[in-house]
Image: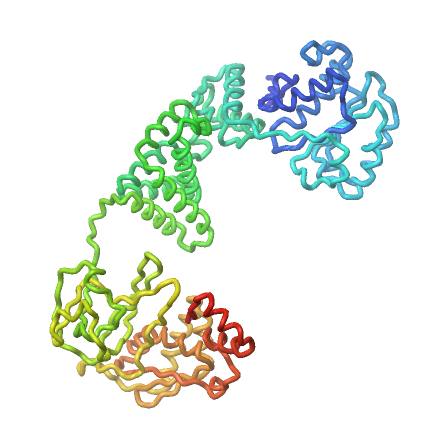
Length: 607
């Protein structure tokens, strides 16, 4: 039984013409041999598996060949060629710098350079992975590399040119090897398959070539693996099954569902992929690559950039014709952002599902059956509304509500950033004051107000003027008499208070945790008073007061509890500055021209 030889060794190129995908380098080397313009040192650099060491061996063999062919190829019949083929050549030395990287190893090499070749014209030294040499070894090699004997030629090979010191680079002719194109690798694999008597589908070979990522040696190794798995017939399904690669069909079907807004189908397809063992990150990256290929397929000029077979290329052209270019660009932006944030997401599955939902909403076509929920907010007399309420011309409204005026109004706070509106669900108690009625509201009597019930209370923000959120009223809100008001002790309050503080700590709100645990809250009846150190802490507690009171009231079963804050004595020190406005005023006092400069630029303070 003959020993098995891997395809990467069995089909290793033996001549310049058989080197795959590096014609720009092989043609240069052949011309140098033909015109006898050989440099004293060559540096071959590039990714793994692209033919650096192979070209170095072919160059060394051809330089010492006694009967070079007219095509500048070795004859394989002379004594030098035969000894090289048998691995017995005394004029060609190979050194692995990864394991021989010390100064002593280089000194031994320099000693050998002194001796003339036994037979032939040149002594060639091939040093692989030369970037692994130590700095001392490089320095010991410099003089010999710069002024070698006339018969000595050095061929250095590396995958990391940036690790080689500049003094070495300046003494070499540098040849940059490219990644081998997918079509070239697929053609070479087809040739190897014919030689081995293997029937392989074109799609299968293209998948292997793409998986190799430009390295022919990797492609041949994968080819051997697939042959061991599938036998003498290699099919597309066998390749994607053995290499755990997502099929093109998945991406084509998911894209069709996204364009149709078919959210259930998209989510079910993603769930199926997870069950089959595929990673969500792999899926979203593959989907982004699919969108990129669709974008490339929009124009016949860029169509050659697709590294797929002819049949798959036609499918890309067909699907790309049904999707607008603007939608593809938005698809790519969503997938790119999902890829960036994937590692930081705690629930990675939900992170990908949200990205898929965004993709489905881009085309404006969704078959979701859930109706949007309208928020209906009763408001008081329209003449008493703040001037930031949109007029009838700004909102589309056909609903009119008439309610009895109340002392206070609890409405959701809203924020508007450019063209996006974010509704904050936490209620904010806004006292209603008597003001002049807006022009749009004067058409109604003073006793009844009109406003769209489905339109929340809006507070506008612009890029030049930001309104500070209305602080909750410190006055107690009148509660219904039927709510429980169980008595409690200070110890019971502290138990509930500390439990809430620990929940904030676990949620990552460390500043809030420090603020509410720095001092012990005081209790007087059902009124809780918390002492804070500065205005920033006061604002933080005020913003959290709704959730804090809700939690404390439920745990103590007393809904008459209220919360107040009190500034510590040092917080009233005029020398301290905590808020943005106070800090700005301090700077303006030190630099009087700062305020004038702000006014000249028309800038407003952001609170």
